[in-house]
Image (cartoon, rainbow, N blue to C red; front, side):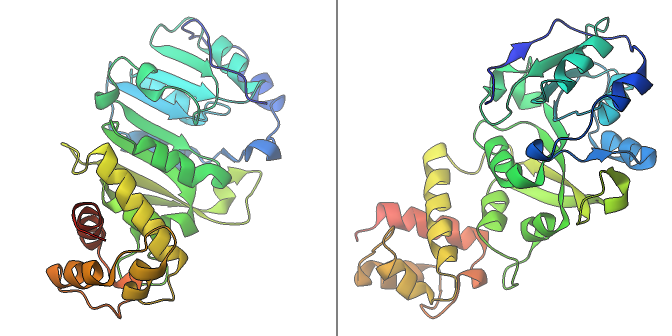
Length: 290
């Protein structure tokens, strides 16, 4: 069971790092894979682009591999760790550093805006568990968004986020990210860079939310509902999805009008629509008659 956030007092100096790492075994239940490659640690931490005093939120610092590089950069760091053993160990490690705060809690249930001094200026970084990658990404893209996000994710997930329209990997996740942010690859992270070694490779991604936000919270929810419905029936034609999907059930007249407005054919499959097409259709779904 996840406990509520426990804010440790600002922490700083390092105790015996070897003993700290030796006694903190990875937990499969939390999807823990620790990044041990020092060159990749530096590259990912450097990609955050934060300097002295800049607010940074680190998700799942684990043994503190990225944390140490961020601390050296002088950032104002908030590290959120769920593990009952690692969180207090990190707090102890940085107990003398007023720039570092360790929060023992679940990133999916915390009030993110309350974690740093200026959420809109905050840069987020983390090697996030594969099994909760999508919920974390969408949580970070919920308005208001942070300034920038650098996350290490499974290579397959990165391919889906970066996929262009018309490809097999293009889907609801692609559109959900693209309508809010610009995404690009920072670097590849091979499986051998982790302990324990996972079965798949990873990619560090930069996801930069657009400012000002292109969508309101209501518009964002409508686009998300439309894309979920469309890609759950991705083998069907667009006209059929809009008219018959139980979450949509648009009238035939509305479907014809909305598609004509975007010069879209009713025979298209969902993967042929751009993110802008989904935004426009969701807007028409709200404003037009069914």
